[in-house]
Length: 104
Image (cartoon, helix red, strand yellow):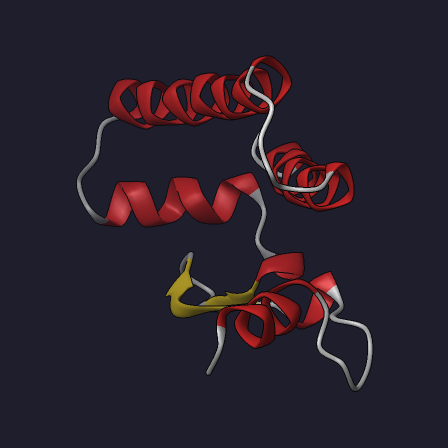
């Protein structure tokens, strides 16, 4: 598969829209075994962390690190011009923001 084909499939399949509700993880999250990104809430991540014997403090530290890294990615795109189109950057950053909303 060529890079342009891979990129097109990653962002929007040529045969139709890629819906967020259709996105799935390879492993289930939470005790009720959610795979679809649109169904996963913060409590499901917390359940998974508890089942893995992760402390609440460690879970919060991980969550804070994700938030910080998200800001770093956004800032990096703004500060360093690249050959990536503004539209593609907005798709990437917009997707990160959308998924982050479910965590905070």
